[in-house]
Length: 79
Image (cartoon, rainbow, N blue to C red; front, top):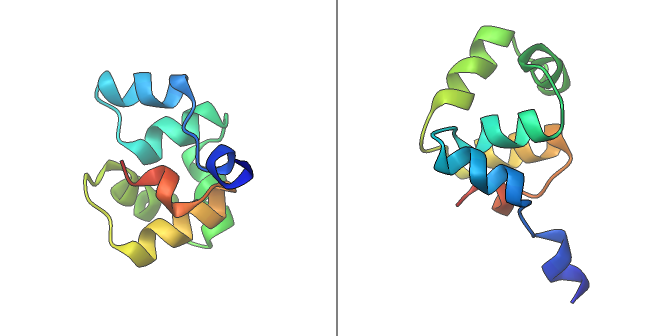
């Protein structure tokens, strides 16, 4: 049960993706982070993060890095 709770995706995140946001953008906005804040956590530039965020399909390594930077599991970004 605990593991299942850790991988849940909030309704607000799902709703944002239905409205056209990528999962990365939906999570970032849900967590009330700016692109610059996430980029700083990932130690990359804001424009580099913006390109990743707008990508529809991310490599597993990128999902892991983004998840770690946002404090969520990579699986929560891959739906």
